[in-house]
Image 1 (cartoon, rainbow, N blue to C red):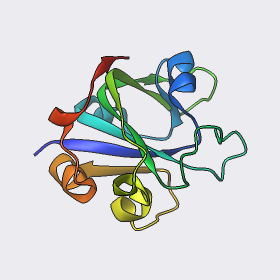
Image 2 (cartoon, rainbow, N blue to C red; image 1 turned 60 degrees about the horizontal axis):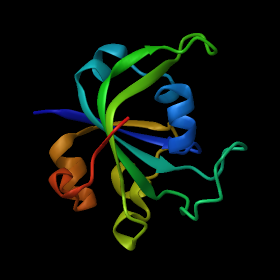
Image 3 (cartoon, rainbow, N blue to C red; image 1 turned 45 degrees about the vertical axis):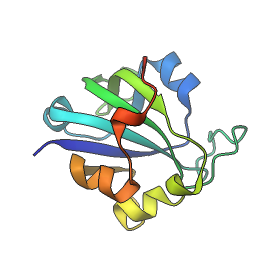
Image 4 (tube, one colour; image 1 turned 120 degrees about the horizontal axis):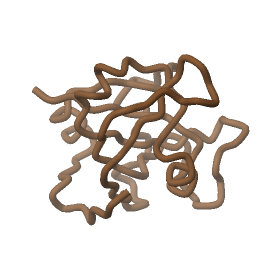
Length: 134
């Protein structure tokens, strides 16, 4: 059984690239080291949230293959989740309200999920996505 992670973030791909991954999270490095995928889900309630791409609050917008994590230098005790490849998800109804479907709307912005469950809940097949290097 493989594990993946859902992250509830106000950042977008350009910020991920600038920072070298998705950060800055309170996560267990040993679990991230074993994680297969990360799904990024838009959180519009953050003051720094990207609003120019039209993504709705709670919408899944990117799937990434996880390579691990490193200590986030600017924020003690937090981790930067690193990616090897990313695939942007289409802006359609299938990915709206993803945060609520995957987590029940929990407040903590990180959720570990069994990978097959993640794909089933989002009706997602990673083989059908266009992958590019991160």
